[in-house]
Length: 176
Image 1: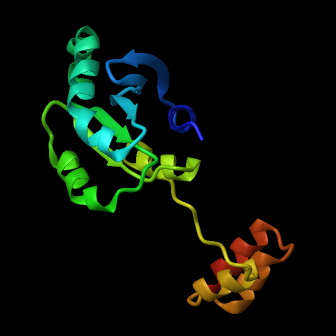
Image 2: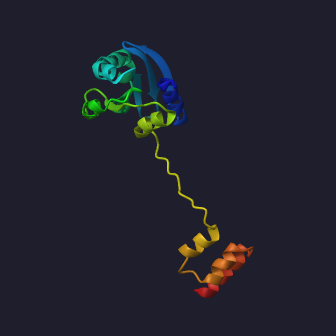
Image 3: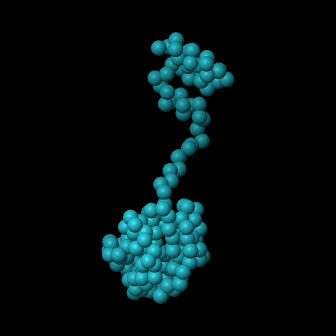
């Protein structure tokens, strides 16, 4: 799987503009929205990520310095994202320390990125909140009746049946 391509797809689906660029340590995926901009760097190994993240960040910032200067408040929301498909548990604490370093940019660092779902999970901090309601296979009418305990049962039955809205309103008016 091509991590850079999957990252571009995920970001475009989230309404980001993306483009590819060459960087000092390999290709860079650049992205921008109305309020956020940043750079995604993909490394072959966790060791390469640990050794090259700082120079990769500085190189991208130097290349786009003019764009960043003209970005106004957006310049406070610049992200450097460092990804690798390699899993390296021994480097987990070092990865956390990179994310805690707010020098120059905000950072997202993930190892073991091997699927499109991993890419999306890595980019979640950049995505709009998406709520997925949990709908069970239960009957809608039964669920509604359970929630409308304060409404007389015959009114709920009228509401759920083919009874007109005017008639349901009339029944509710009689109940109050």
